[in-house]
Amino acid sequence: MNLIQYIKDSLQELRNKVSWISWEEAQNSTVVVAIFTIVFAIAVFFVDKIFQSGITEYFKLF
Image (cartoon, rainbow, N blue to C red):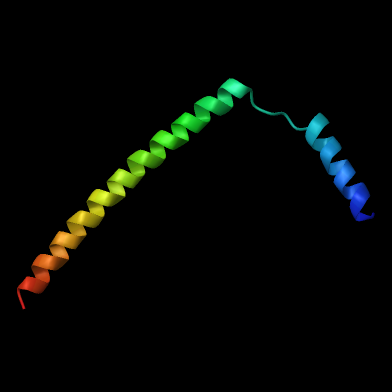
């Protein structure tokens, strides 16, 4: 099978055989992912600050 035919078949399969989620579901999923990403980034920030202050206090002992 040549490359052109493979691309044509792939596009046809994407159009006709793949079930896509609705636009509303995609928007809702995007919002959930964005919120989770922000919450996770904040959590990582605070854990990093805790470790940073702990290590700083540890090295002040020497």
